[in-house]
Length: 141
Image (cartoon, rainbow, N blue to C red; front, side, top):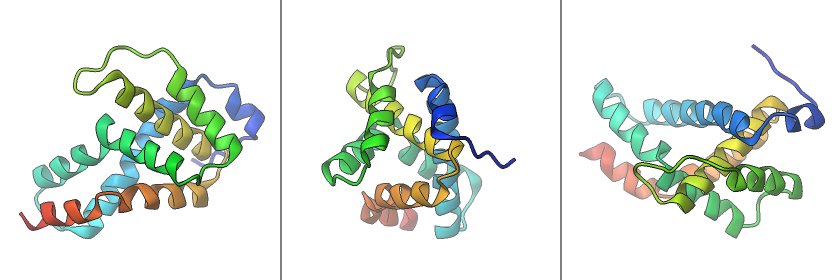
């Protein structure tokens, strides 16, 4: 399905709805990268994916994007909407990590709805590069 909403239309969705979609967009990109990097049994692929889609790692990515100043003003606003929305208490991360991860997922969902696929690729590549050496070591295990 091809979705191409205006920014105004996409902004009508709640931050958690955007994060719901953004979570799947982000996870698919992670799975694609892992599969292309290593041909291994599915359970090992899954373990690698989990290490990259967890709130802790997504929070680090969100902080990295902010520190590098790569988000546009509009992207930063979408991220903040997601980060500042009320969320349930996380099980395996701090509330700060979970909120940052929700903000990142919200941003990815927004960019997907507005058909900004090249921008998703740019931001995801920056996230992927974070911890890439550690990831390459895990592949060798």
